[in-house]
Amino acid sequence: MTPFFKIDSRIETAADNALNRCKEQFADIERITEFNQLKVQKAFIDNGISESHFVSSTGYGYGDRGRETLDKVWAQVLCAEDALVRHNFVCGTHTLSTALFGVLRPGDTMLCVTGTPYDTIHGVIGITGEGMGSLKDFGVKYEEVPLLDEKPDLEAIFNAVNIDTTMVYIQRSRGYELRPSLTIDEIEKIVKTAKSKNPKVIVMVDNCYGEFVEKREPLEVGADLIAGSMIKNAGGGIATTGGYIAGRHDLVEKCSYRLTTPGLGKEVGATLSMNRELFMGLFYAPHTVGEALKSAVFISALFDSFGYATTPKYNEKRADIVQSLGLENEESLVAFCQGVQSGSPVDSFVLPEPWDMPGYDSKVVMAAGAFTLGSSIELSADAPIREPFYAWIQGGLNFHSAKICALLAAQQMLDKGLLKGI
Ligand SMILES: *Cc1c(COP(=O)(O)O)cnc(C)c1O
Image (cartoon, rainbow, N blue to C red):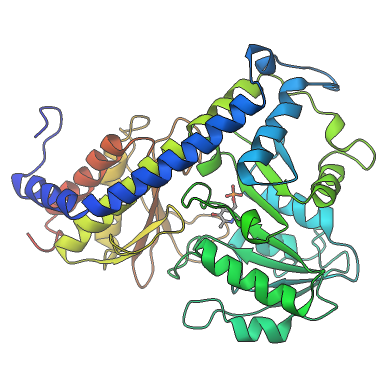
């Protein structure tokens, strides 16, 4: 099939069959990609984007047209009243933290309705850590509604929301859990349930890994505030750092006071040379997300055909770009990650090994050969070495490049005598 890589003919045949099984899913992804691409393109045209918006500012960055217009373009794409897109957000966690601290005040209550949130948010809320200045340290109360059979428990949410609930917090993506990600329809149901109990409640969505996976975004179904990372879906694989917050104008303004200072807000902040890549990243994002989705669907179909557990299944509806594979033992997780790494455009010569990563209670093995360090819209795989021996795979700047990495992962497993179903 390819003169450039050595792949066993049985794996090649399995790949051809897997690809055939994915036709319907690929066609669906294609339709969503086109819809979102045109949505983005229209926003660029409506805002009259030109070379002048890419000019870089220094110092205080007063009157930076690029920065101000980028916010407008993003707001239009996300159906937001206002947006704050900044390279100054150092990662997704920082962006979410800025939004939470921006909006919540001492005595307020934050209610997470999708179970315990993503690991790195625990320290922000104060579930873990003490004296670091978490929301808890500042007197913000935290409550949680667990999932019921891996789905939002609408009845329990209805019971948990009351007039003292300031914020309902939703995590759209599965993150590094095995539960399904939330569809926009499910987010809509949560919003309706929460607001029927307290119309003033602020619904915030952690939108990481979810942007452009569906035709609609959470603000279109009644969420008030969303946030995400620019080195995941939203940056299209082009942005090299940053995050965004979008939603109701008054809330985004509060977040801007937290990012810079009360009073200064959005009016300051040199863009250095970041405007062009943030615009370009947004322009590419729908397409790149489509490629990442195709990659996930294909990997799911291929490993399903070998007899491994996959979630989501290749033909299940997706609400984020994350794919998990049950590879059954440590050796297979390591071989899989090594195979993926060996096909990466960057750092292909590196051999991933399990290590004691700070903040994790088991060893973790990771494959990442990315142009942007830690970018997970680029193909990457992470696997904690513990039961049930699942690998989490996400990203893929383009399908063909992700596909060969998947084949090399299978090949590496075959070479070690680990691959099932062959
Ligand atoms: C990635 C992610 C975050 C945090 O982002 P970082 O950039 O790693 O700090 C938060 N929530 C979810 C669901 C994520 O996927």
